[in-house]
Amino acid sequence: MGWGCALVAISGDTPSAQTANSASKELVWGYRPELDAVRFFAFLLVFIHHFLSPVDFKSYDLFTAAGERALRVDSSLREACAMGLCLFFTLSAYLITSLLLRERESYGSISIRKFYLRRMLRIWPLYYLGIAIGVAMALLFRQTRDIVGFVAYLFLAGNFYCAAFGWLHNAMYPLWSISIEEQFYLLWPWAMRCFSRRGLAVSALGMIAAANITLFALGERHAVTDPHVWANTLVQFEMFSTGILLALAKKRMAWGNAWMGLGLATSGPVLWFGACFFSQVKQPEAAGVTSNGATLMIAYALIALGCAGVLQGFCMIGPSHIPQWVAALGKVSYGLYVYHVLAIAFAKACFDPSRGLAYQGASAALALGLTATAAVISYEYFESPFLRLKRRFEILHSKPI
Image (cartoon, rainbow, N blue to C red):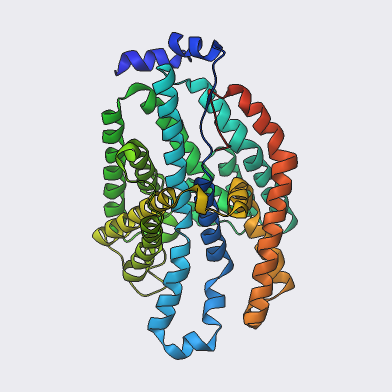
């Protein structure tokens, strides 16, 4: 299972996989609109987090008059929305693990080469377009530091740069998270090729252990939680591990009870809010709270449980309760994520949200509309040719993931 499997994997497709790939039989992996709904929900949370800046929150007399505790509640609500990114990570691991499990069960092996080709064709075109846009903006506004940061992004190490030097002041800065996704993809297919289901579960639990050791060490050193902890690969691997474990256990989990699913999905944001309010997991310095190792471990455990609750909850709600427009927007969620900060910046330049709720509503509506328009156009005219090419390397045909 160890060295022998690794040596065979290095050569590319195994004989059994080659035979399967040349067969005329095609497997179609059923489309699940509820997972597109999870994608859109995750994006919407991230959008709200980035749209509602701390300055916007504290500009309202209502919260100022209510006192510091109300401001902390308000800040925690905003920070809880940032957990949409963790939900993206969980969903990504769930989908990839499910797809590769089905490929292995159907053909007896996994084609590493085709997996990487599929991932490159899905992720890299829009990712590097986003970097090009970011570099152009950095040159336009003479942001030399951001140009250096985008060099790290080019080599899929954007999260390392941000963890060490802070966030870029650029509309394309959220692309740092793609680096973590790609780092996960670099490792996990090999594990899936070599290990049994039990071995995969042990590997996922090992990643959770590594995440908690990292959290404890960073917490005891009083590391800045945003971005030093937030952008750490090992920390976010706890979210990927959550998706892996859900994929491995989905045959044993309950399905079909929509009301129970709704309750489970609702529990996610509640847990995220609790993590942010009681530990200020994203910005402890802003709230005057000093995190320690145990606090960070508990907070990220709550975040991971919340991601599991949302994902499993949507699966139990089922496709029949998912509006078509939600699934459609979930289909283009990658573009939504790439373009949304740029759209927010433009909308806020048109309608300053600090001038009141009416301006804030108009700014949010404009930003969301521009983001959706850009994402749909990008999907239809830029991403689709690469997705059609990607299908040539699919073993199990599925919607873009």
